[in-house]
Image 1 (spheres, rainbow, N blue to C red):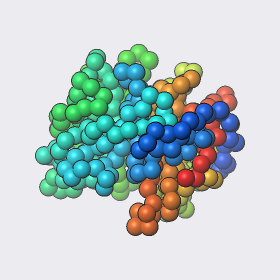
Image 2: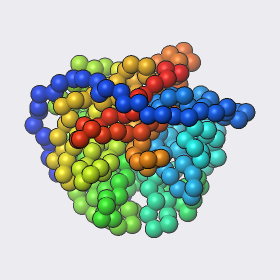
Image 3: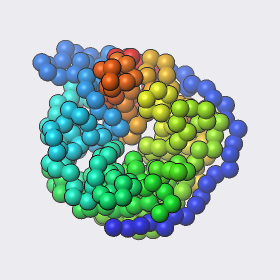
Image 4: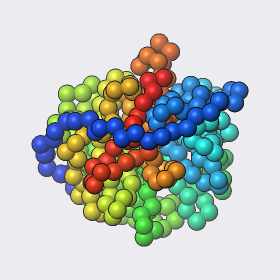
Length: 337
């Protein structure tokens, strides 16, 4: 287990104009859903599941799309990280659980899994509380198949003693093959950071570099003042780091920052937030994957009341990412249900 040394690289505050990026429509087909499957998508961003599937990530592999999410109450007792499969990004079915039992080093709060394929192996990065003291660490598990089962290797990185640990891992392989692990530093000062990894993706190859903090006007005054859920993507030689801020219970939203290097420095977009409200309730927890025609965003938003006790669920959504120059947006997110 590594306790990663933190190298601070915080950006100065900047004036931000809070706007909602104009919707850019993209056609989406629909067809009747087979029995027991989620309803067909009628617009990008519509709910793809009727059940809870928060902080989703999607991996294209072996001729299909595989989705992973934070552990939910509907999973079998003792199982962790339900896995869904789809061939069209419309109809999804559960095919198993990534972990058949909680790793022994963990004590709960199994959050935000994300999978990267490296050299024929599938590497599952996730966050969990470390048993004994409750701080969060990034764990790593390995499988020869995208659906698992994954064999846990233990914690990869834990936070400095003055933090509550690391959450929301997002592995990223650059154009030159270099691998980076983006993550959230979970308080007391919330930040986004990145750790360079070895070519096999199994261990840290350098110190943690801090990228962004809560220092923009559009991030403040929300129910939770945080930055979390990093989602990197490379487009036309520029690195875009999408992330969430606010509270997933009420005012969650997404923005992004741009850099010339995977290690930053990242500059927050003046048009943030890029995804907020409208037909969606508290959208966020996103990740980027290769979909039809280019990069897509997987994310969650509430279906029904934004409250678990009242029957609400944070369901899986997906929509293409679109660019106008360096301005990034999500294609016509729609569908409140």
